[in-house]
Length: 278
Image (cartoon, rainbow, N blue to C red):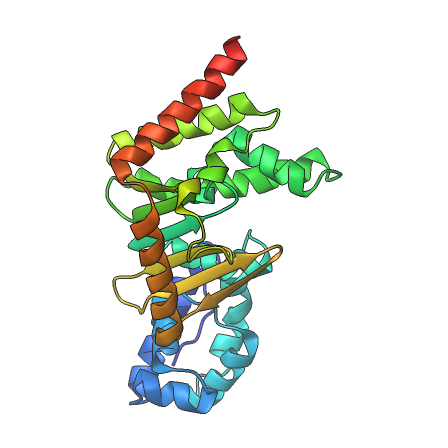
């Protein structure tokens, strides 16, 4: 039976998930059998074990009772739940870090994984115009930390569909947006990411209701994340994930090709740069 507490500095969620798998298998239960008294699916248990989903305290208590683990999961649930991100985004951000594939539709702003420091700062300042500078600094630092996963040359596969409005919403910050567009172009040209632009000419399309992120994993079922203003929801239900996957497929079908998209991104960046020079 698990005994000592987990070290919060050592991937606590992954360790907690590994301990859950050991305890479940020792009890002779399948993932579906453990999920049944918790009123969750077997795939949800698999995501807990893989570390892609957060274990809430109520689940931890019930798991301790079912698996007779002496309060181990309740004691360690707090360490595994700690996050630098807002509550509505924490689970998605932590799943993102474990994903082998990420597909994202961005209708309003450049995806967080592709933002530069100056662009992220402008976004957070627009959201929180009266926040202390230290608060903005922390938000920017946390957002930029997410993009470190792109340091791996191949994993995760990142495929983004970006609305044309995102490329052109510069206002008084043309230099900032141009810099970020050049950053995206560099990542595309180095074959690290795939980007398609959804042009204004697409008209009414499948993504008008908001942003969408799809995540796939090597050893866990896929997830879908949808986000609104100060809210977000992570889905693992296969039918819901399939519906959002179809939405993304429809968006890519209506978007410009990757080659055409790169040309538009670089052209818009050049226009902003010329405006600054003139």
